[in-house]
Amino acid sequence: MRGTIEQVWENESRKGQKYLTVQVGGERYSVWDDKYFDTLQEGVTVDYDFRQSGNFKNMTDIEPVDGNSNGLPRYQPNGKDRQIARMSCLKSASEILAPVQLDPDAKKDLTIETARFFERYVFEGGQEVPAQNSGGGNHGRGRQ
Image 1 (cartoon, rainbow, N blue to C red):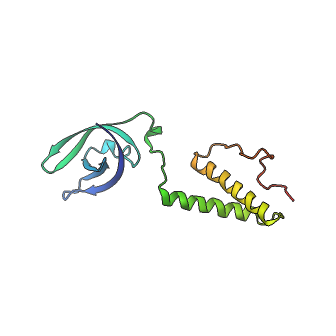
Image 2 (cartoon, rainbow, N blue to C red):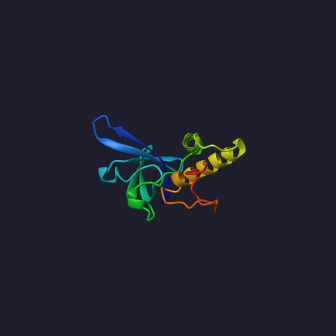
Image 3 (cartoon, helix red, strand yellow):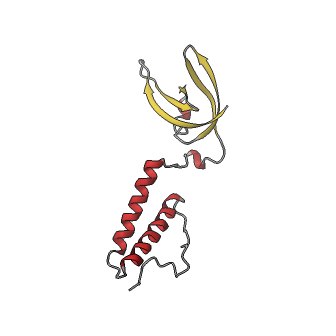
């Protein structure tokens, strides 16, 4: 089977043995083999088998699917996280451009352009992102 891990819970049995509960496709599975503990994180896609044990499903033969960089999940922000990050980008752009002297409409446009630049930087993994505006791309530095 193949699926993406939606949630992971760390647990301990009554006898003190640690195990994980992972949710894939809305189904919960137990993982008892600690060699998988570091690999199984939210967002990781895995190929796996499972065996039924009473009311429980025990995940076995787990292999991360290629494309998971170093076994770590790629961060996928939910709507609230994305909104918080966007507000942070807008606040940072506003603070950086506060001393810049421009008419209010031009300053608003420059602030939004700068915030969008920051957003692209944040959501595209910190790679260098060229400015969309061909006006030099200095994002307010040195403007009077």
